[in-house]
Amino acid sequence: MDYQYIIVEKIDGVGLVRFNRPKALNALSPELMEELGDALLAFDADPEVGAIVLTGSERAFAAGADIKAMAKASATDMLLNDLISKWETINHIKKPVIAAVSGYALGGGFELAMACDMITASESAQFGQPEINLGIIPGFGGTQRLTRAVGKALAMEMVLLDRRLSAEEARQFGLVNHVYPVETYLDETLKLAKKLARQAPVAVRLGKEAVDKAFELSLREGLDFERRAFHLLFATADQKEGMAAFIEKRRPNWQGK
Ligand code: CAA
Image (tube, rainbow, N blue to C red; front, side):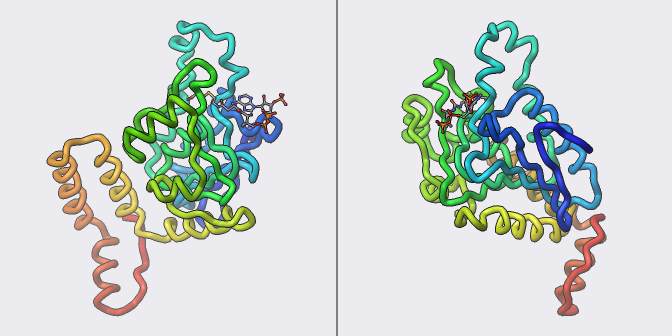
């Protein structure tokens, strides 16, 4: 599929999406987000793809939602055009998604990364919610996902004072899985994604869903969800294969069913 604002490719079971608006530091315009949504749904439906990686350039993962596309909008324009709802596709993807971040991950760029399942960072990554400087606040989870990750004190400072996090700080706060040198961050992320793509697909899907429930449900409801998902996996051929392979001391051969 030909896109104008993103580049997509498949590498050994991994669907890779690169944002491609270098001159605008990958600002997430409505058109780019439309293409991203389309590519994510295509990869989610593609049986050859087991994991997805979103990335930008070394200089910028994404410097936020496109300010130029919003500058003149009225509240009713924002409400009726509901551009942010186009961003929601990421929340409906069943396969694991990793954000590979280098350089700026600001505003909506940071929020998009936080909506992924894991974040890897190059040593130059910088995470922040600078919306306050524009007279607005984050609109895609920056006050919610960030606060759950870093706690109230730091979230307030980031949202109200544009305090930024380095890659290493973000890792210490549990926002980032791994920090790599700039030269290798994408290759290392692809290795991680290929590993994810080789896991038992149904278990990966339910494992992702169950971890996400921890942010949405009470502990009791979350535990109930987990138990049902755990039981359900005993209906899969992969559970039989995984346990047989363990007992027979061989590698499992997953079928994804
Ligand atoms: N939207 C539109 N264009 C952007 C942009 C954005 N978010 N971020 C950068 N650009 C454009 C600049 O306008 C500039 O374009 P021109 O050459 O046509 O002027 C180009 O990218 C390069 O940017 P700079 O010249 O500013 O580069 P710099 O190296 O001096 O600074 C930066 C880099 C610190 C990231 C700076 O560009 C910046 O502060 N960008 C805005 C960050 C921001 O406020 N993001 C939040 C957006 S609102 C949001 O995301 C809402 C939400 O929660 C959903």
